[in-house]
Length: 450
Image (cartoon, rainbow, N blue to C red; front, side, top):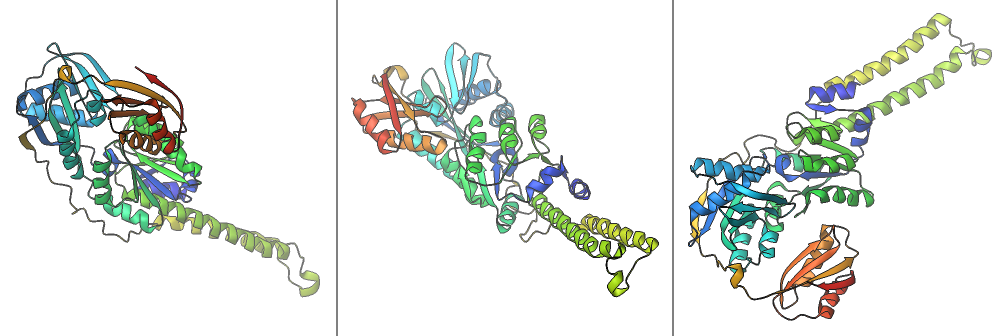
């Protein structure tokens, strides 16, 4: 009770004594990126529009679609459009595709916005677009692509500021011997840029919402004690799966409900503080157990008169009661020492770290090869049923193996459906596709031509 009380005084709400006991055994900390490592308030940093479409049409299309989404990136785009006084248009048939983006019909034209996967499926991802995407991602920005009627309008890039104490908190966790893993739905280049900025040991990028819990389970299967830190609805299954779930106080209700600990100050340093508190509580319990066993092992035989026949030592009932009370007083007093517990941080935890500057937006016309989808050469699509894929790393291996085949235009690997959809711009045999997957270490159950 003293430990949970001290945690509450420090801004860490501990829901059960079991959670406090488990947290001291944790050796791996998994951090969601958005809202946990970062501020959770992304802003538009780049608007790169095609010369044929123009900035106004790009922003109008993007904001009109994103108005119907609750994603933080969507809200940032709508806010940008409002600042530019852009008049939004109604959208019908709005739909969200998890891990890809959104689509709908605006002014009678089919429109979509999303990540590279969605652009590849539409056949609009070329070398020029790839170069722009990689440049933005290397700067730690998240590029979103928007198209209308089969034509790419441009790219809107967004970035979220890292919290001032995130790097210091991660350094402190590493100093304590904890492995720090960052989970994010961003592409690999953007994720690596953030990882480098905050100093995480490892990053798992392009994680779909439903895959976060899978990643936690995978770490646990490796024998690790895992604490998950998150704040969103998508984090709730992972928070529940982890040995210790830690929610950000400013997060969603379902995330807080699924967690064992809640950080009221939204500061990652409190994660390190909670682990230190867990160690202090367990150390205090062991001290009290040792004292109680040692003290009683000596005093009970004396009080029972065991040594009286040989040494003449005995205790009156009054002194025996006093001695027993002294033992209880010692245990309680030792436990109360936790009132003076304060986490000790070796790293500089000052709030004057980079990341507090306002977002600056670059608006620029760029050369994007806008090719109408109807004018593209005919392509063939094949679907391979694959066994053996267990995680996003497996998905990446299969994607890389198939993408390396000449004539393959696009690859979409689904962990949920256990298949890979391959778009071909040339004649590629089933045998070549199967061989590439088998060489990567997986089994192909069948190939279908669509």
